[in-house]
Image (spheres, rainbow, N blue to C red):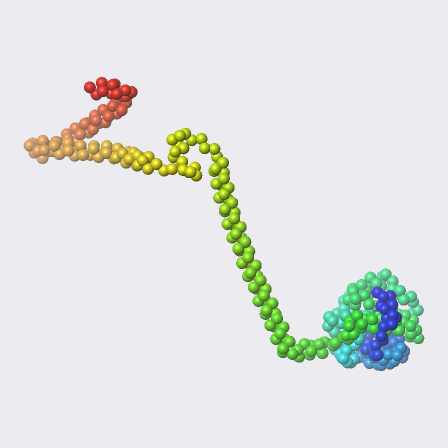
Length: 377
């Protein structure tokens, strides 16, 4: 990534007439050393507040703001005054800095808490800050410019946040080649950001609040139309789906009826002559009204036979009791009562005899008319 940036910066890239830089990092990270490297004025001193200096470097006007260091472990342990200085640092370079350099000492092991602290302190300036940030490794000793695998692994998260941008400053400040390469990488980053600088959050919020009413109204109308369009599309899709389901059900019913009709026509008809005459053209059974009437007659006769026997017995008993009472009336009331009892007894005997005679008559075989006539005689 570094090689790519440095190569691009050396291919005739038009240099910025001025560069505005902000140095950030923990306490003792080496921000003062970096400021001295860039402006060639030796090491600065950390005064617990933002320090702004300007100088000419390789034909450019370079303005550098050094921020006070933050706590290496947690944002909560950093004083509110330091946090305020960090937030206000980007407003000291109006309209905004071109690059923010996160200074990390080279050769020190970075713990997980320290990585989280760096990330949280940087995001005090908003999440947008990473688009304009470059990781800067610093060492005052003469060392190779190639980072070790251990350093790359320990700063992997921060490098990903910065888009893989980094640079290394090693040795004395008299080595101006490294500073020139750093400025070239910054110019490449500015070009990748379409020459945009980092807009401080206070200006960003002000711009958002003062957005013209026409723009906000147009956005609102657009969102409403999108909602209405989505609602209409949903309604239309539901209507189409319902029609498809109804059409499918209708087709299935028609196919089922046709299948049943075909299966019924496929059955071979083996009726006799009389039975075939009772079928219509479609093979459906005809209704014979005479047969229905005969059925109703048989049912009526069965009901009459069921109720006529007890009715006959009751009428016979009443008639016998009546005649018995008349016959016994000449002997007084007692004779009349005895006549009723005798009449009821006679009627019971008569009914029983008639029943036995009918049963015997049904049991006699009647194979021929001649036999029946002989029996009757």
